[in-house]
Amino acid sequence: MKLAQRLTLKQLRAIVAVADTASFTQAARLLHLTQPAVSMQIKELESLVGQVLVDGRREIRLTAAGEVLVRRARDALVALDVAEVELKSMLGVAAGTLEVVAITTAEYFVPHLLAEFGRRHPDIKFRLTVENRDRVHALLQEKRADLAIMGQPPSGLALRRIPFYPHRLSFVARPDHPMATRRNIPPSALAGERLLLRERGSGTRTNLERFLRAHGIKPLAADELGSNETLKQAVMAGMGIAFLSHHTFAMEVESGRLVRLDVADTPVIREWNVLVHADRPLTPALEALLDFLQSDGATMMRAMSD
Image (cartoon, rainbow, N blue to C red; front, side, top):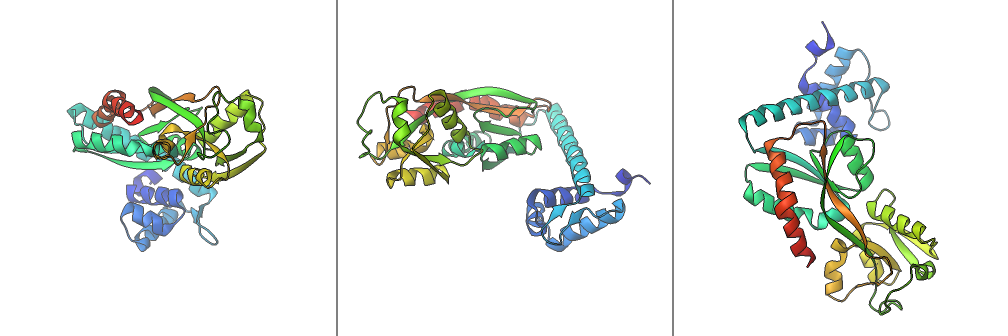
């Protein structure tokens, strides 16, 4: 009897969950099962396949056979999700759960948009994941997200890009910084400053490095601190200046704790994009969210930016 006739969807979901979390305990929580139940599903699957799929001697990781099976299990589960989408679309049902992923900078506005969307569409639920650019790319590549909100789309993926709203980025400093009151500061002046950086893989970091290269600038020193919140606190503490999205520092500028530096050629203006898989049909629920983001969502963004 062929493998497809013997294994179960529960077993496939179990090994995919273990692969995603690298933990039997976390996989159990994700699947709303007990840890022994997940372990049993994996053991039964290994018995059916006739090979070890998960090596847990030191840390939980897939064997070569496990990698093959998980890759094909994802394909099978995605195919079933697509079938569900098509069946619901035939009924015109705008309901279900959407997997939404956003880059970290978007966490300052995406919850507000989704909250309003949820009020208008109570039958549509969503799970929001916030990650850096590299992780968002991985989630899209693995087709574990229905929709992504980010800046520059990742390359090599079949994605439909919908420009959503302008994304402005500028340099910020403490109000008592020597450049705080200067106007039309030449970018070359940044060469004598200590810059505070987001982590590698961040879209904000990529945009900063692009700006510095374009103006031939090598900063005096640079410190990598990670999150937007940490960067703001470090700037307010006088550690240096930072390059951040306007979404992240509007409140601090309004309260007088930070100032936006008037550096020439800033703000750097990019685009917020909504991304969906080009090779997957849109559910009525996903179409409803796309329509909302492009119309009322954009209006909300303008109001938040004023």
